[in-house]
Length: 401
Image 1 (cartoon, rainbow, N blue to C red):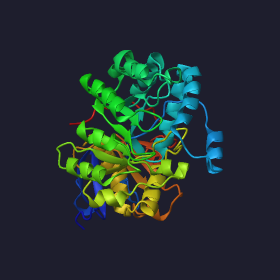
Image 2 (image 1 turned 90 degrees about the vertical axis):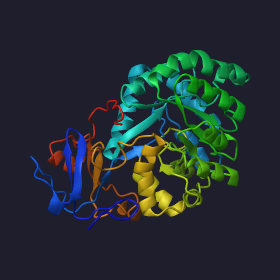
Image 3 (image 1 turned 135 degrees about the horizontal axis):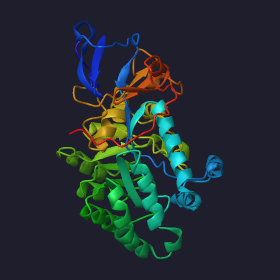
Image 4 (image 1 turned 180 degrees about the vertical axis):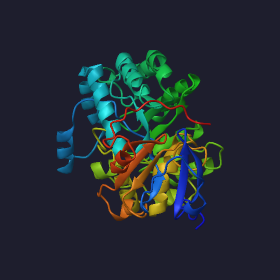
């Protein structure tokens, strides 16, 4: 049948891949001749997940903090400093091995495009090495020197802002595409956040912003004003915040509301109201926020299930947010969808419908993953001559215009 619904679902479908791109999609009966063919046996095929918000460059463990939180201690941004100490003490090799391990974990679960941030070094040298290591593996790299003020600047945040916008930005900008700031109590207020983001813009970086995680604040309005690609968390929004995001939806490059349900799950916080945003016409992305403190999950399937159960999203809306929505948050048109000209990044579910991602939460449904048309993870990938373990090295890929 013809493509239908918000996801453009095509039944009894086929797609043709050549040189790493999708070159044809349509019904199986109309498919052109090809050199080889793989029948996935009626399983659902969807674009690879696009995770537009992660923190994968870190060392150490915060298990005890999680244990305490589950016993009733509230989450606060200060726990970040625990990871900062461990990350500073780690070698380049240790940080690279941890990043590779997490990227492989993401890939096995169907994520084929990943943004990741610095933010656990908070010195010029440590932030620069984190971004250098990340840029060797993914093109979506974010400078987050403004995660929290560094411990040695705790009593003088203005001195730290001067460091971030001066020597640190000079060292980090060559390795990054984006600049981010944690605009939140315990981190950076609106004025300091503006100073940091505008300094990054002057250096050619595109802003995104952590906003509205712990309570309402100026972050959403600031992100919209500065043309941020995304405002991330959006747990606590005012009516004015929603109106600003809805107004920005009409721009050629809107500001996407990126929701991170793994964080609310792990911190026992209220979930963001996705329904409120969607009904206002705001573009929405779902991401894992994979990090050692507040959301140590790499599973986009888990985030889809939670978004459907707790955040007012339909299965189709959640799946769209985890694919095309994440691509929009990264201002990408070559990923997050399967159309002629897009990258051949896809996953095959061991299920007849993508709805099973929410219908069967916690079940490992990914049967195969392809990246740039190459089978890289899962038993179906192995059958096609690929790497079933998902250990294929990640390399940066320049976005296709």
